[in-house]
Length: 371
Image (cartoon, rainbow, N blue to C red; front, side, top):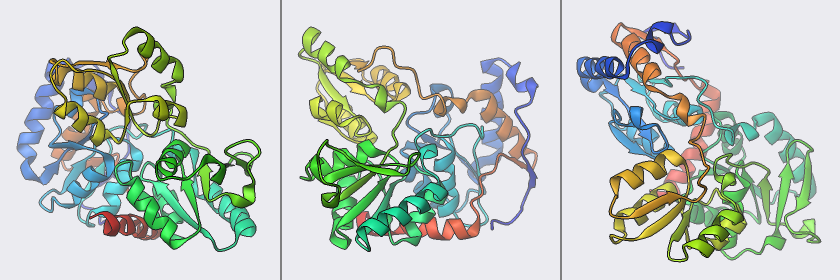
């Protein structure tokens, strides 16, 4: 367990911070960052609001930021501009003396919430009864520490959208079947891209505790990929009707989507890849290129502002930013920085030692494959 260097508090955001202007809040953040110096590290996820991402020391995806946090031994405090599972991963990877703060504890992830360790153990019991010792569990890093620990205990690994193909290939070198959680779409899209037919896939419904073929009429005995019935609430809102409209009205606009989108959408898109892949495609694109991007709105709008020589719009014109990501705002950031400056820790993320040890195994297996 991480040692207690500060007072442990978990209050809600004081009203006073809600009444300050943006200029006053920005000044507070700047003053505290300067005072804390290198003892503070602020990693920020690509999907964060502009008002807080501007203060990030580095930006990136969740695992990249957790690893960068661990590589900052001079930082006593890490204020993670992201969501709960990301801060958990940072806590797992950082040494005991470092403290990880999530400015708003309500900043969760609906996908991560679609699988818990109790459901995982029940699924494992039923699936191993059916298929025997032929299954390796693999979890997307967008999952809770408890789910990562379940996977680690059973010899499995974590995976990111950037390394999914490589890690899945390794998983199938270990066992005949993979239980992929919690995002069915990333699992399905990755396996299909690797050459697996959908007739070899099945979907595990954790609510009904039931396994069904991914394709009607397919035999469950032939299933080699067991997909957890979970999804990203943002990426599932990019639909075929959006692609069809762009194809009809602007056929020269390229469609670029994240693999958390449905199989139908990723198949119909021009390009599909991780958040870093999407960013790289835009960075390397020629002036005048036209894009419709299927990923989180904060990132799409930021790319449009940073690359005005290109025409960049959201694939879904009615899309809103991720609601849970957006909970990290300027008042919460200013408040937790004020508290740290006064020697107090609020909204600390701590993963119990036993869970951290097993979850760490799953993360380390992935890093050994991809580093």
